[in-house]
Length: 266
Ligand code: ADP
Ligand code: MG
Image 1 (cartoon, rainbow, N blue to C red):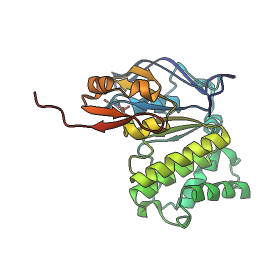
Image 2 (image 1 turned 180 degrees about the vertical axis):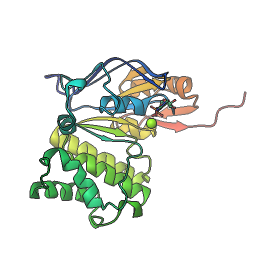
Image 3 (image 1 turned 120 degrees about the vertical axis):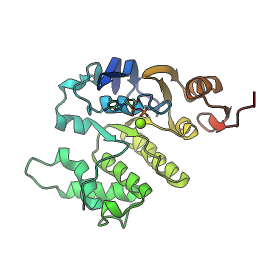
Image 4 (image 1 turned 135 degrees about the horizontal axis):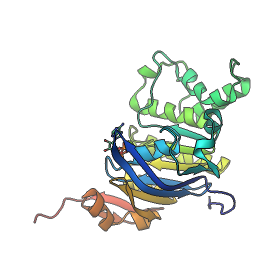
C-alpha cells in the first residue's frame, strides 16, 4: 500500500533517549512511520532495536518524545493504547497451563468490559486469526507443548486478535522455518493491506527484511546510522561498517538480497 500522506504519522519519535540501569541505550533516536507503512529496524545485536520497540509500545516507563497517530504516548491509557498498538515481544511471558485459544483470547481484553465475558464476536475474531496462521486444530493445546515455531505463530495470533492498527513485531520470524517465515510475513502484509495496518518490525534476516519493508532504519550503538529504502540501507558498505560483515548484495524482488561471503584473507 502506498503510505497515505494525510493525517498524522502512525509513529513519530523525536530525539528519544533511553537509559537502562544508568547506561544510555538509545541516544537521540528519530523515527517516523507513516500510517500504512511497513518499517523494519535492523542493526547488530545489542544495538537497541528491542528497546526502541518497547519504548514505542509503551512498555518502558513514560518515554517522552513518542507520538502515536498524533497523540503523545504518555497521554494514552493502557486500555486505549491496547486498541491502537499491539506488540509481539522477543520472549513473551506464557502463563503456565494456558491453552492456545485462551491465550489468543487475551488479545481481546481491551474489548471485553471489566468483569464481563468475551462475546461471540471476540471468539469469532480469535478463530479467524488462528485459521489464517495455520493454527486450526491447536485450539485446546497447552502453549508449553508447542514447538518454537508454533508458539511464535500463537504470539502473533494474539497480537492480530487485538485488532490494533499498529503492529510492533520484534523478530517475529526468528523461531520459524523458511516456509513459515514467509507464511507469517505474507499474512501480516495481507492484513496490512486489507485493514490498513501499520507495521514496525525488527528482523535479523536482512534479505527477508528487505523483501517486506517499505523503509528500513539501521541502528548501531543506540543511534540511527541509516534510514531509507531497502536498497539505500542494505549496502555492502553499511553492513561492513556496522555489522563487521562481509556480504554481497544481489537483486531481489522488493529489496536486495544479502548474501554472506567469506572475507578475503589479508
Ligand atoms: P537489540 O534488540 O538490538 O539486540 P536491545 O534493545 O535488546 O538490543 O538491547 C540494547 C542494549 O541494552 C544491550 O546492550 C542490552 O544489554 C542493554 N539492555 C537491555 N535491557 C537492559 C536493562 N534492563 N538494563 C541494562 N541494560 C539493558
Ligand atoms: Mg532484540
